[in-house]
Amino acid sequence: MKTKVDFPTINQKDPDGRRPDGSSYRVLVVDDSMFVTKQIGQILTSEGFEVVATAGDGEQGVEKYKELFPNVDLVTMDITMPKMDGVTALEKIMEFDKNAKVVMISALGKQDLVKQSLLLGAKNYIVKPLDRTKVLERVVSSLQ
Ligand SMILES: [Mg+2]
Image (cartoon, rainbow, N blue to C red):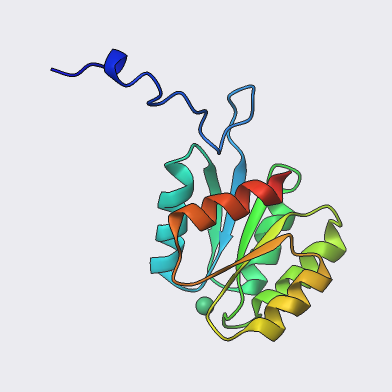
């Protein structure tokens, strides 16, 4: 039987979602798709992040951000949502907290809205369908 000793590099890497002190980065997931919300949640929690709240539209996303503040480290923000779209919600969050770290989640073909979001202060963006490696890479770089 193989043991850990045979694979000395396995599990040596600290999970991306934890700070050096072991506490988790706290994420608010804003998306009107339950499927995408669940997918992002699974990717992030598997790396030690904590999803502290979810919201199903932009309006609720802004409200939750204000409620959680300052105990939230990052937001994933879908662009296309009912009531209030992600770009407007991003704008409102940035008005409230100019240091907010927001990563946009975009469908294909929304380059203009992605560009606009980056100008408004979004740290990065991810295009659907979501790829685990890309999600983690962009979330991690947004936290730095
Ligand atoms: Mg959507």
